[in-house]
Image (cartoon, rainbow, N blue to C red; front, side, top):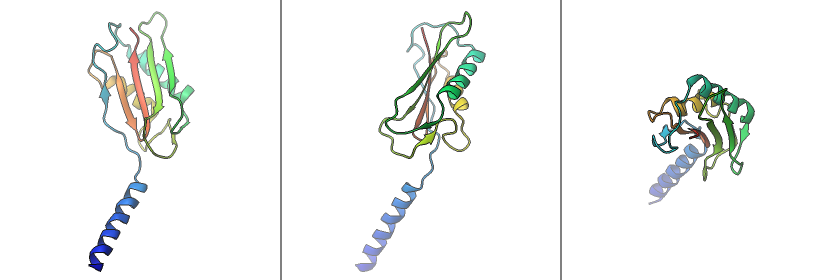
Amino acid sequence: MVSFIASLVTAVLAAHAATATSTPTVGPQHCHAAGEFGNHADVLARVQQFGASMACRKKGGPISSGDSPLPWFVTGANVQPGYHYEISWVDGCEGESQNSLTPVEGATCDDLLIGSWKNCNNDGAGGWIDAGCVRYKFWPSS
């Protein structure tokens, strides 16, 4: 009986240690429904990529639980729709503060925001992806 209890305690402590030291990872890509934002003009790659880069440069940095979302809106000369970007802490996510410019090893803010458009086949409606506790979201204006 004592060895069973000792084994159980060891297993619980090992599971707790693994959870406490886990490193944040990039989650799956989520995509908005194609018509979610109504009719909008085609999303232009160069403008979308510029907007993502600017959002990261202007809004990037440390982010923690309880911080307000960091929105960014961009439109190029004579380009409609406008493009919305948002960097935010995932509601209910528990973890240490993260740098939104490089939230997890091998992932950058630019790549995550650009990917939230490029990796979705939904007529340019974009989507979101989580890296650790930081969410990167893109969507067009109608």
